[in-house]
Image 1 (cartoon, rainbow, N blue to C red):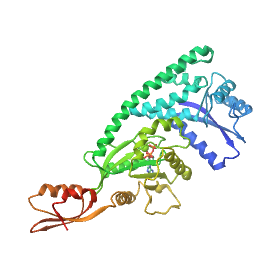
Image 2: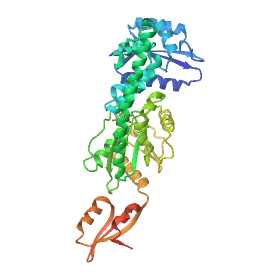
Image 3: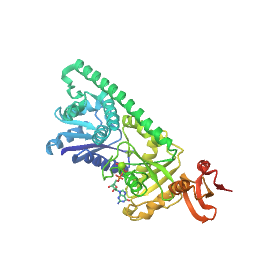
Length: 424
Ligand SMILES: Nc1nc2c(ncn2[C@@H]2O[C@H](COP(=O)(O)OP(=O)(O)OP(=O)(O)O)[C@@H](O)[C@H]2O)c(=O)[nH]1
Ligand SMILES: [Mg+2]
């Protein structure tokens, strides 16, 4: 495990609570990247130093601490400019590795990327971020093996030509990956079109990382799976367990079907290039008929996590979609201050009835336009009877001399299927 020191600034405009949140989150991000934080150092200041981020004195202190703890890596809890990176590196020593929160997040995403699409998206975001910072990040790049870009070979002493070559190489890599991504996007669009052919409403799980989205997804897959839709998604107590989206068809007990999509979790100050890169994956959220916004109610920073998610959704121009807010992990909440309403539910994995309530709420929103209908099926039309039994929300079945009388809640758009048998 790599050991590191984390360096932050506490601006006079930042509250203690906000600052401690950012510090704790940074430590979790480091853990997610397999880095042990041996010390967190911060400086109180009125503003950021544009050339060195922290004051020179503070950086000297960090340098001493790095020697004391025998640590080679210092991660800054911010996004550094090339200028700041260079200056900090010269103060801390050329043999030390200096990088920032954005590089850390990009790295976590890269190690978590399991699909080709996720890998390409993160790689493009990472290269675009590295491009203007090649010189400053040289120690990081050489430590991380040049991250397949050859960028690690960019050394300051090698001069302009070498740097220009590296830049050109990276630009070519970005180009190549973008082309590959376009191909995958086409396949994704085909898959999406195929799903649209089912003509089913879609529901997207959104929220801060580790809120419990995949856990909800898995509950629905295991309890309401439709036609061989069994594959569970990864749920784990770590940041960014899910990268990329997974869609499964869900069939509720009343036969109503919808598509449920699990998505990547958000984090505060999500790197800009990453949001850009993930836009195509997150497009699916835009087309959802309903959003389930999952919030970890046991997190001391719940408010912040909730507003971050809302602002990321806004930046993706996702608005005006009906939303159910889920206050999740209620089993860990000692004093519950939240109230349930039509669009707000309290959920806990330990309380199955809360999940049933969620299924009911989804049903009420997605299938509110059902019409209570009587259908009389002649006995010889057993195939139609079977179809209705498997596909419609049946309230009552009565066997009459003239056939089988079914009372069911049927979507207006589906009524035509039974038009010959509907009893007025
Ligand atoms: N105590 C408790 N833990 C829960 C509950 N729901 C989920 N968890 C745990 O929270 C952790 C994160 O859950 P995930 O479902 O992976 O979270 P996620 O929102 O998909 O996270 P990312 O994929 O990282 O965005 C896991 O360890 C879950 O077991 C709950 O109701 N109560
Ligand atoms: Mg997940």
